[in-house]
Length: 107
Image (cartoon, rainbow, N blue to C red; front, side, top):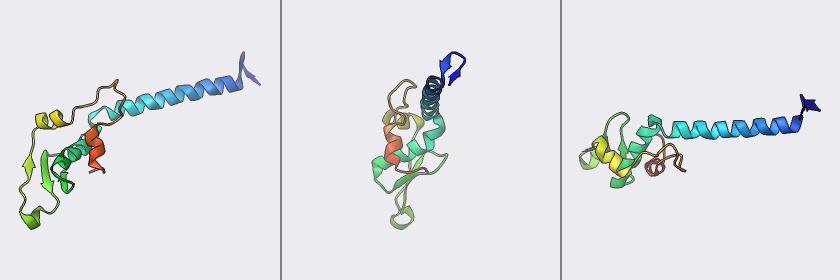
């Protein structure tokens, strides 16, 4: 079979390659934006230990059991956060930052 002058398999192959490249581009685009910021901030808090987490929307690291052992929350600035967890460039080979991977879960 032919579509115009092109064989069907060739057209399907080109379409598949274009969809694959588009998908990779979109994943990279959304991965380099601030969508993952709360997850990265949770990973930032892991520098204090595995039981430390960040509450969504605020820059405070809290210990999971702070009500038991009276551990004080640690407030951090956006500059402190970006010094430890630099933002990926759009053209970098990584999809997510190291802090995203340290987080272990979505907040």
